[in-house]
Length: 202
Image (cartoon, rainbow, N blue to C red; front, side, top):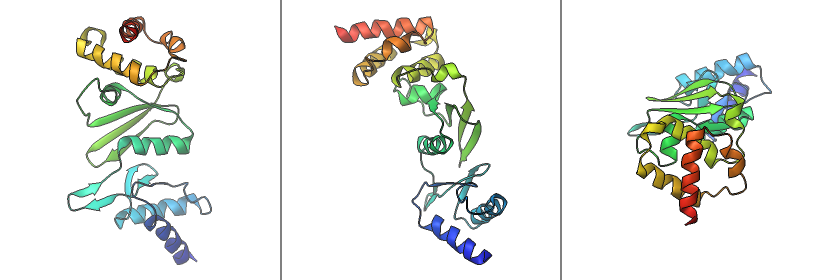
């Protein structure tokens, strides 16, 4: 019986796509403790990579080493499983919005789910449980802009940043939600957004 179960789970993993996440709860028909041991065994065999406690990913092996999915793909899958919302924060938010060219070695997100760290080779992905006010935004752009601008800091905003903000406000227009979301932003960020809203209307 045990051999049949091992074979079945191993086959499931082998036929799954690159980047697929597996949790100890991914096989609910079997005992959690037993699945935990199996996933650890498959990690030793090189079939899976453990990226966090109870979380494994099917990696792609190349001649350059192990290739992992992007941090965003992984946290999106975890958020889906946890029925959680994620928001890029810090340098991650600034990079994603084109307000910084620096690619952070540590990628960070706020989540309505559990806090955890993911290890993707040398890269670290941090999921931190955030305060409800961070998730009160109706739109996505304003929510992410607030995180990015907080990271850059009020006294470090350049004309180049302002040009990018104007561009984002045109490309990712959130006319239906921006008035609501502006009220949730710190006053200094609100001023920056408003003046760039005016410049896009010229």
